[in-house]
Amino acid sequence: MNALRIIIYFKFLEILRQVKDNIFSLFILGPMVLGIVYMLAIPYINTLAIGGYPILALDTIELFVTILIFLLLLSSISKVIAEIYPLQLPDSYLDGLPIAPSWRFVSLLIIRIYKNLPFLIIISLLNFLVSKIAGKPTQSLPIFLLVLLPIILQLSILQIALVLLAAHFRQLQLLRLFIFFLTLVLTQYLVPNVGWWLNLPILGMRELLVELYLSWVSNQESLFSYQSVILVSISLSILLASIALIAYQRWSISDREIVEQLLAKKRRISDFLAESLLFSKTIGIKIAAPLLRDLTLTFRFFSAAVYLSFAFAIIFEISLVVLAARTDYPVIIAQAATALASFSLAALAPALIKHQLPFLWLERSLPVAAEDMYCSKLVYACLLSLPVPIVSFLLSLPLITFTLTDGVFFLFQLLLIWLIVASLVGILSLEIASRPSLAILFTAITSLAVAILTIQVWWLGLIVYLYAMDKLLMRAKDRARILITGLEGDND
Image 1 (cartoon, one colour):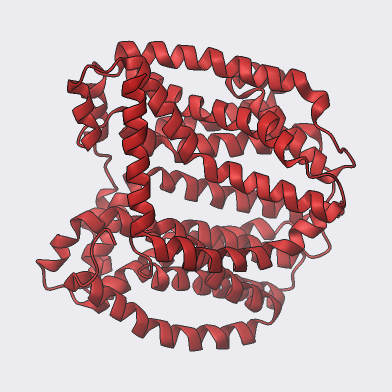
Image 2 (image 1 turned 45 degrees about the vertical axis):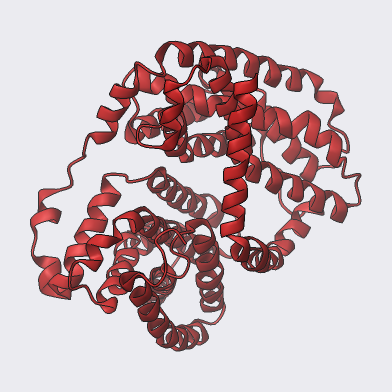
């Protein structure tokens, strides 16, 4: 117990140090960004609270919640690997100390719960706002204790158990895990009875999220009639924690070599992409070289963020098909889906920059100009999201009736929306280089705001875009020069 207390104490000191180093972002920039997000989201929350959205079928809601849980599991894999198998991290020194594996496991679980707190906080705030607007009791404390804590506990245990089992059975590859989760989702959609048994580990947590959502869109005021669901979640959490604890005690040390080998494997990118001189002839070798490097890292899946970006882009394209046929404004739905899917893929640029910061000394040792650095990220964001408007247009053809002229103009609008979103994300990706979560939020507000204006009045959005890009190009050049010259630390 004393070992656990010491580990948690020093982890707490590490958190305080991070808070101290990020005071401006957390207490000044963060509240400003959250205020803007609140103003953008409050109309949709109002509509949700007054029952303005149609109530989906229970199977559909369960499918969406299952996808959300799987995305949460996939997005955390890289961090959980580093926590369980600290191959080159300071935590590896704990291996030489007389600390029982059970206490190490408990500390991992506590750290996982802490890192999942943002998800819990978002749901808590959303529940509070919806309940207040709808005039229903918020029940904040009961919902926190009886619903959200079991959810966050089961999610944290699942994240640890997934990495332990996948590592031991040599399946710790993001592509394989992505295919595995996709198979589970498709099975639940096509064969619900079989999918229920295959998704047994997420039962309880999934049902709690479903019931919480139903309480927002219906007149249900109490969640206390779902004690059985809460009991299922807690029981599964205890069972999964026992399995994960046994796996950690037996395999955590012996599997480290396996994990190191799996992480060292490199996936091959297409020889045509790697060896083609098309990019260097078109945009110059100084931009083509880092661009090919960035694309190679992306297709090698440098982070779980790659899977999340592609998954969200696919979800937005699927929503185009589902919603366009059920609304009187299919063109606007197609344009909105294009903007969101383009942003999902282009948002990999800030995440990639964060991944490359420890290796920035390579850029500094080469004759790399500031223009080359930000131009490569700009082209990267645009190139990676280029298929989105084309796919959106092809999906819209059977759903929307066009004349030839209207079809050409519609394609032009989709391409314009893609260009605006992708280029703004690319040019702003250097703003908060060491904090991609804030950078993605900041670029989302900026790019999607201009995209919304373009959807409403395309020529006005184009004017605003051209004016903004003229100013942002100079800003991006200054930011790139600061990073290259080292005036801003790599971890600032």
